[in-house]
Length: 337
Image (cartoon, rainbow, N blue to C red; front, top):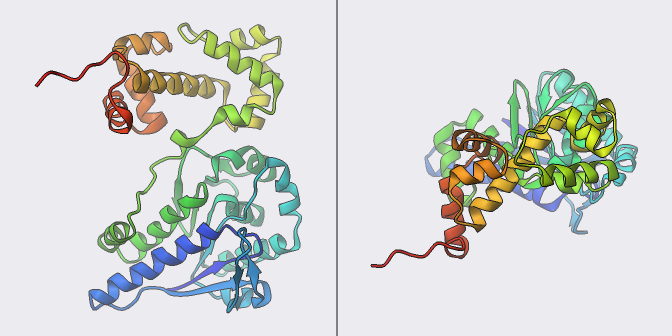
């Protein structure tokens, strides 16, 4: 299978390196099994010219986008973007326009296109994700939603595989994307061996890593809303109640939450409840039933369901992690031997 990795100036170093390491390891595993190497890999740039990564490393010996256009699979790592305000300049750059054209060309001729992190913007702007579910780096979700409104974005997911398309979350989710390619091309056994060789863990979701507080920080209305939510977690919180409490209309609040957090007010409230529950479980010995009451889930069953959806863990697993990381939660003493 011909796989091309499309690169340009300021690409993330890890995004490129992870894709290469996963695919080259898959080739090595197959050689050791006396099987044919599954991937013929090229790294391509506009006109094959050298590029500088985000860490200013110079990459040479590249093929051109004309070569990449003939690939069966095109991988698009992310570009280094530090602030939401930098996204428009990135989308307006000549290199990005060439990348968008390449994505559209590969997809039109029947190839598969896969992107991670900000690389998903190229897929979105090329139109190949229209009316499809996709993900990107969680903190880029609001910018992506504005740039590509026809895409059904789900930033809580680390990987969204589709037919001839796949998108992944933040920089290191390129590992999930490359492993997905290995698994669907060569099989799960080889993919599992690759994960062991490279000490990789696949990420079932981005949700545990999403810092919605950081996204809300740029909007004073949402800062006030979050402060009120956290002070009233024990009771029910409706959109109407929250809007009235902060002096905004329901429509305005819902619009601002969607624009800044790429979610709904109800999901935001549930996320804050789950975050506070996780904090209490990790740092205190409060019984699970009491934790559920204190954060407004009502029952331990509802709390377990929320944590499973939010972080993919159970309350017991959270407390076990806390003990492994730094001892028992306050108030809990080890049993006498």
